[in-house]
Image (cartoon, rainbow, N blue to C red; front, side, top):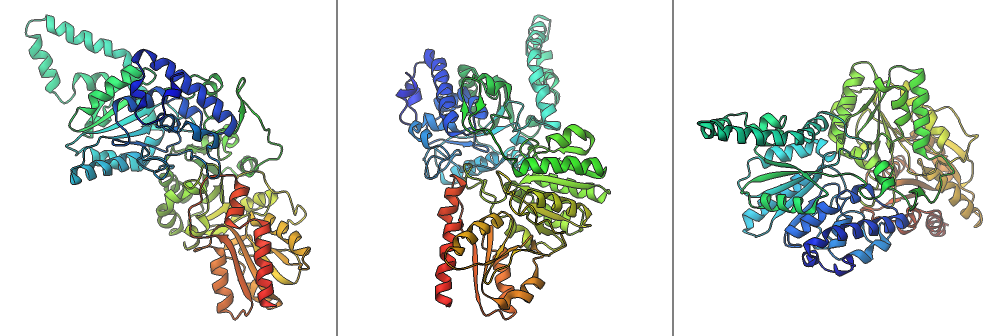
Length: 621
């Protein structure tokens, strides 16, 4: 009834105050209904409904700038800026993104998708406003989980020197994707607990006021370094950094949040408004299982059960089983997660070996150097991390792990196209950004059994290694091809003629399907499982290249700096006269959408590859 009246930015201001609660309920019903069909980030969005409403009631969009950290909790923001119709195509190819997109709306101030960036971006907006003389307000909304990222503290330190208004909203739901860990989490718990002492503070002030010279005592206390507020609320870390602290505020009380934001907006300096929310609020299954409903596929609303049940174990499941077995056999093996215990399959390892499991929070750079320290101390750390998140620790991989040739294993999940989360999450850059680092061994399994073999191989190596594997169901083809893994050695799967398909990792399955299409056109290519991107099998290529008029490299990653590019240079520099065809992703960011559809759009699906080979074959015949 009230939600349908919101078609443009700022329409929420027309909704009477007494009906805000009804609007919040309608928004939650809308989100549950839509996301149950499309999938998406549910729990985090249900938790910020009233907070988002308050932001839109206080600020004017698109003039004012609201920057959402990570951005997966911006669904209500999209609703309140007139994008309700877009939810039918949420996270689908060509449809509405599940994250803020400047190209999608003027009300989306900054593209986000990775954690801990909102304060830096907001600070940049503030300084740009001051230099250009513009007139707008800036608000950064960051979660307590995202506040574990180092870049957030760098920005907070910088923000403390501001002499102009800038509002940071700390959305504290005691969760990132998994439950929060670390010192900051404990600090915020103390602040939450201190809420019950606010009454004590007031009573102290009132008592002093009744005493002779009580006003002088109050002023003296307020002038001391440890004010009443600091005595009552432990730490006061933010105020020590020069940022005025307000809160905690009930994040599900729209009026209370509106009042706090209006107050914060009037302060000539940086302000942090601490808002307490509940992830999954208003939908019982999400309240009870917030991690499961962080990012969900389609589900049945009444009980919250997924509509499609997984029949085949995915690579994450396989990795989890392998880690448990390796941990059982080798007491030196330990596991590291950056707030992704469930997502990376480490829960079982954690349950069985809690003393060897470390969740460092959303802090990938720290996780890498922490792993380096563990390795220097004689352990064998395995850092399980999504491909798109590992790039945040690039400097530490290069300088702290590989420079010292330390025995760290990077288990790179979600390598390749991941689908609906879109361009900030596609794991298409890891081959390129890791290939140029000395000492690092890069591997990718053709199937689930080879993932197990590569993990065992990596444990035996004395230096750093990385194993990339895709999201989704594990390939179970070539089960009988389980030859011993040797450093830098490829594996010939099918012996053919004229054309060689030199496929890396997930592209072995694609090569098999491409083979079947080419066979119908009279071409029976050789299929080679590259296994290693660094070092790749130069010896095999040198010995066999003269037998083929075309060598096709295949990788699910960008071509620039990838395996194919380096194989191409190697072949031509060693006198290969035939055609080299590099199959991969061109120099682009890849939007959200179904993975199979994206592969067709990018022309790395079997049909597109077969057409390219046939066309190139005609030219070389």
